[in-house]
Length: 313
Image (tube, rainbow, N blue to C red; front, side, top):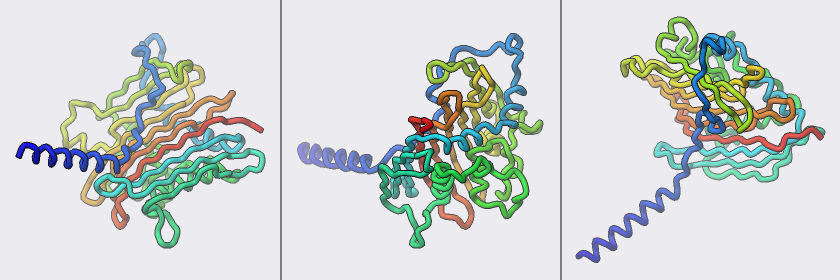
């Protein structure tokens, strides 16, 4: 009997690890892992305040410009995408290694692999999230792509604004209103006087990529709020990395989660920039998110985009 139990236990353990082996952990967007915190900033001595950072975030356009500038350079890009079923097991994947030539300009696929349930019968992507990222980054490697293609439309779309524009707003412009998603309204506008009462602000001196002096500005939901109030706040955390030398934004992390009777989503996104010569250019974009929107298929995906070896031919 004892031997039989050992055999059964061994079987179930093996079965368990086989199941785990079929799962791929999602990319985990973190709060800029290349940051080393130094100390808390003395607001009086530095003459800085939360308002200083907020104004810079609201007025910033450097992220869009950085993506626009990519087309001037030759570089290598690696794009990895995984889609998941309701049990968070991988049901589709995309991997592309691309060499971008600034002179042609053209893309050369060094590696291109698609597996699983990625496309519909008509050839379009199963998930709007994958379609959005493919649209943005595949087109970003082409010469005719502009900064405007990254920028979500802050007005004019109303309830007819496209799903892509809604995702663009959440991903690239946290803090702006999202048009056309019911019951969200101004929940994304975390810097309005009414919304600021629910958030804490802190900033630290830090070092980015081992050499760049930066400020790390963090906006997070106050811990002492009631559970009901916390659940009603969509943006849970927003972290922005500022270059001390010119106050430009080098990195952004956003954690968003919201649920009501009509839809729910849970999204984390991290964007990191690096300097190549005097130019600030995208180096890492990581995303993971679950979306459940009316009349749309539930979406679960994780995405990692790496850019390196920028140079002008």
